[in-house]
Length: 134
Image 1 (tube, one colour):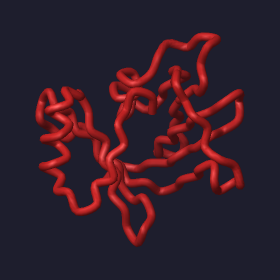
Image 2: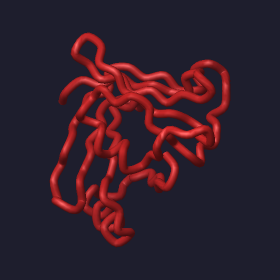
Image 3: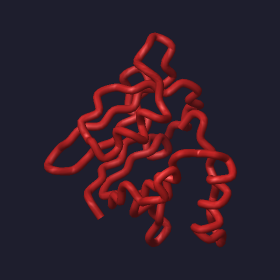
Image 4: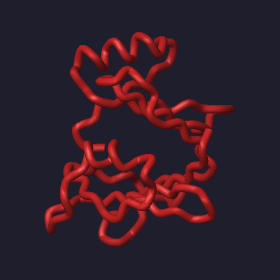
């Protein structure tokens, strides 16, 4: 996501990640947890309130390398339709209003009681994730 900082946590404790994030004055921390080498859970922490605001299990995922392509560099991420309330505040913070100069569009939709997060470039999916509640 544009304007974000990727940190491979490795052996770093979550409290150290939160401390570093607080020092950088970021409002949200997105923590991806894995199981057997695969992403399994997304937790969203609101550092202003000091609370976990979302916990979602990742039940499906597709990335560019699944289709034999390389990920694109996204400098300007714009908002599409956001049907899933659970991700609305985070996506609103990291995205711009829809315009002609978007590198990618992020949207969410609800299907079968699950939230699908979709990043698209020129009407082609770059990546998607399907979430259910933890």
